[in-house]
Length: 223
Image 1 (spheres, rainbow, N blue to C red):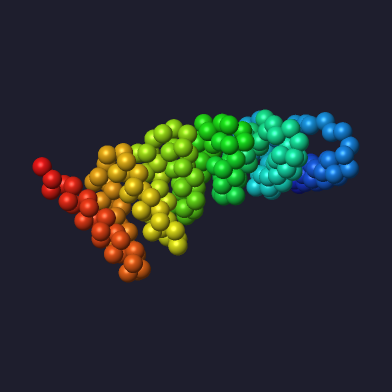
Image 2: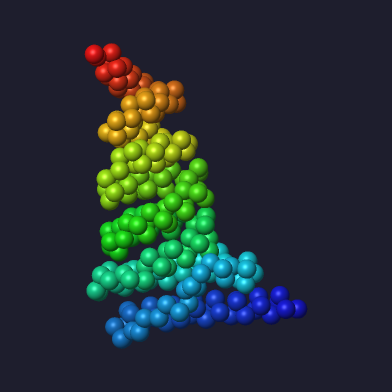
């Protein structure tokens, strides 16, 4: 009986929240003044046991709210002080929500100017989805390269992305090899190139990689 009551309460809260988001969106479109409240965002993922399985549903609601919030501020003051918290909580409540990781990896470093927060969220995504979604380790690798000037960690991320079966595996393997080379780790670069040579079915790609392997071997032979 208690479970039914809790379920009804949560469903009512979700419905009220969605209605509030729709009212807010209508007010924005009508040009009405708006007071921003983020009271509906949980302060911690420790609320998950009390959501009785509705945590993924609530994560989707916060996602919709985050997109409304982002679009609103993108067209006005370009201040996104709540966006990081919203994306962080979405990925805590629903760790398999890959769209949120992608958005965080692209938007938080640029519009929120907080690469550290983006790194934390993307690393969470790596732990959950890094073996099935190549773009999460790819975004993390780009973050390490662009904001931390760390080609070695970038190479590790690109190599992880290349190991995920996808049409992008070849490009990602070449990218990983390039960054390993930039970091002075030629052995790892060679391993990535050999992986690409073994897995590619494109003869042009294979010829190109064979040439790269030849370049690496010639460097090793020099006194």
